[in-house]
Image (cartoon, rainbow, N blue to C red; front, side):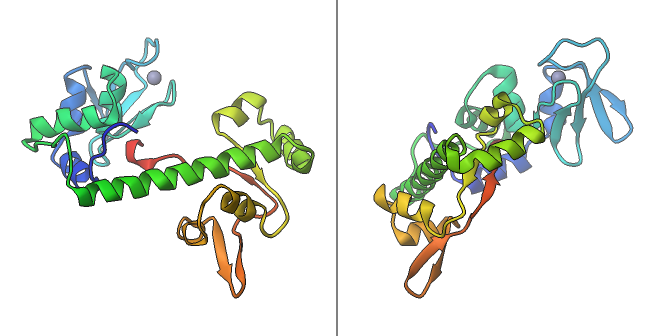
Length: 212
Ligand SMILES: [Zn+2]
């Protein structure tokens, strides 16, 4: 995870940064309608398919599929971490990003990290079930949809079993509290306990949106 920067600070820097200006320091952009085009720096090509959309402040390459906001671009083109990309662009925008944050910020950080830890446990559990007999029908479905082993790995697909509390029981045994399960949307409460939110379905995890 690296060092933590509050979302408001990240958003503030993003709003004060122009993606076109940043990308122009690396690539020659040509206007094409609403978008700006360039030869993609992330794959070999002879005709430009790397697009920058000034209105949405995002980039996307139709050749290799990469895309995201200005932080993602800097991370990829300079090979730096997310906090470093935020700091670099913050400095340009006149916003100093401290190395450390107050105890309140640290509490927010640990809450976030705890959430990721629990999501990670759930993902691993669902992935394991997909490879077991209980997940066989889901696996057949994925094979029919032409989702190869490689893309199953890439997208970290899993299977949530049909019962009422498989994940809940598993996570409780790992020291996760009922409160946490409900707050994170993994379980729903009922009078005498809680039950799994996801039942008998294929699970497609969603990744951190901060760098997208
Ligand atoms: Zn590309």
